[in-house]
Length: 397
Image (cartoon, rainbow, N blue to C red; front, side, top):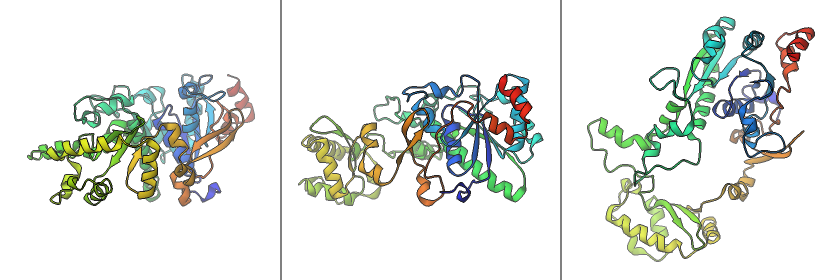
């Protein structure tokens, strides 16, 4: 697909962010057609380059979040580096940064400076808890943020476990992409830029409707009970063990599906015609104890592979819990084109996740590799107006 067919073609982004929320957001924007200049610290670069596991040189993590970008190394601790950053801002539409609140101001690169340089600048800051508020100074690590949204406090036994996904990081990324697209649309109408304050905490908190639903009811003067149960207390929305000791996830919520399943396993006694639509997301009270016992006994009779075969034949959502490797190699992943491979000049042939919007023609189908550290410094400096002599002097530093 040609880049000029994509929705953000012609938009230039200077990306000061690193690690996950900012880089994943700017990679998505690159997939939508934007040209992204990734600013990295000389010699070290984005710390995520050095994470494990690695390919030959850089981490899987780095390659998964920085495809289709261009890298320029700038030392923002030096006055000359700050001047280069200002020149980049002058020539770009969007600035993305993910430092702790206040650092860009200390560097002389905050929104006030950026908007003075370029009044049309869309400036997006991503931090753990936002620029204001009593928690704004706390480092934005995902686990801490998830722990304070209520999301991790919903287990039936009250015991929290470390989540397997960085939901706060990705929530911040998604709101960053949404905000920048909205700001670009607004700029088309007003001609003005925008200062965007993305809090990873608020981004995830805004997605916690189900965890917060009982609290909402209580705050309005109602009991909040029984709560909407999707955290392990509902025996029909839970995890069981197969005959070969593997985990099976089930979602037999709707009465029609539950009835079909019960007849299939010859347990019509588990069907209660007085069940209401509201019951599907409950613990089912005393009935729930009977349900859980029956389901535990049933799934212990079959292997993981047999359960997968049953799901494919019936369409009933009784899904084997896949390891990451098993998930990657599912036929469905291949059939939907969710993973593809690219040739990297150093790493060799490596996989990447295909943007789901590519199917609709809204995003790149094929990634460009993540850049080598400083790979595009000379090209970018030339694009923003530096002379050959100036470029040689800056690169030699």
